[in-house]
Length: 377
Length: 225
View (spheres, rainbow over the protein chains, first blue to last red):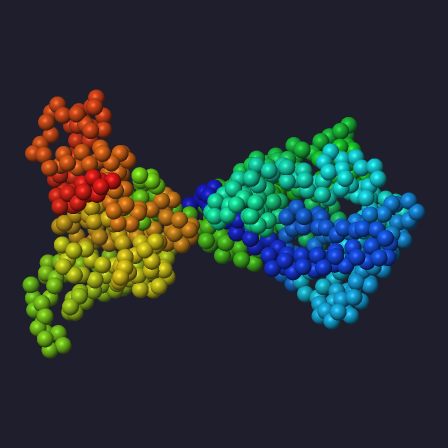
């Protein structure tokens, strides 16, 4: 076999991404459910607590970097923030969380009364409430309040306070602000992508649907997250966390629109963005300089070790694909690292594409459908 | 030329023995291909392999018919329906035979007197390799394709002469009707160069090989443009 060209490695990675992405119909189904829930919660908050509320997506759902679970039958999760516009003074963390649980219980009753067939179960988590839908997904609802003293470099008005796991303290978060930073770090790629899609679809740039504008950075992060999930299957404790992967990958992204090139560059360079501040590892929250995403590494150095080990192994592995002449070696690697059930089909196609490209290059006398002329005259 | 009784009627067989021999000889390289000359249209059928350095990448059932061969080109049909039979996929209506090359390119690709093997090895090979490439990449090799009809002819001469300028191409085509190239004659593409040392070689090659009727046709197209 011939070595796979960067063009074909890109196409191969695109196919892996397609396999890992959350199916569009599922995203749409979840969206319908949370819009309905958001509307109900806001009305309920107004009548019961005389205050507004907002329900919006957060986390990897908002960033467009969710991946499907490794096992086909497992559920997808969609992360939502339920922001109630009330003051934190005068309400304890526990009461605040309980009030949301009580609201969600009444929402489920409302669905039942309305004859709705798809009734979710309510499950209490440490910080959030989970609406468990029959079928393939659940929605995590994280209760939050506006941050009265937000300190963020971007979107401070979207700063939130949330309860801690023990329900004794308030913690800080700003998913919208982080999303703004993330979008900014790929603005070049996003603009390029939107323009080219608008051109090929014959529509205005602003009419290009959101779900079509998945950038190479987002895809690369999805692939890295799946690589991480697969590496740490069964040993969840010290696995690199998504927000660190996302932040480092965004810093290391070189704006390439070739997914393979982007990935190899990211894993080669993401280490450089882990700082050493007087012997303490720092992965700075890009919108809050005081927050260290790697704050747990100090008390648990195994986490840092695992992070470096994982990046190194991904680096070696991705790098090796471009020098490999035996397709079976790549197939094996994809099966192991991404738990793909169609790895053979994906590499088989890559091999075929490469062979045809070499054969096409070898053509001496060009006839239809070849041409060596320009496209206009 | 032979005659043969077909369905009780005498019909002229439209292909000479020498060509039949050449076709049969050529097909020895292609396993499983069958040639039948005992019909009004001699036909080759078989499974075409898109093959390179011993690896088969794709197969297509094909049929090749001969009518007025070798003056007229054999017609190639894809019968497995793996490819949509459309003009954009380089099939010609109404019978959707493969569009292998522009007629003006024949002198280069499959000159008169060449073996049927050349036909298989160059245009037919390229055509199915191109189709297979398209099915995997969604575009033709090198990312471009030749236009249909006159557009394809214009593109062909643009490539041949290495210029897009239609006036220059028209002048160069006209040169092929001249007895010889005068030593001092300047090239239409560059007044500082002699034609002999510039596009002269291509003009001479064309003059020696291309059918003058086709050159004349091309000149009319370039004149219109």
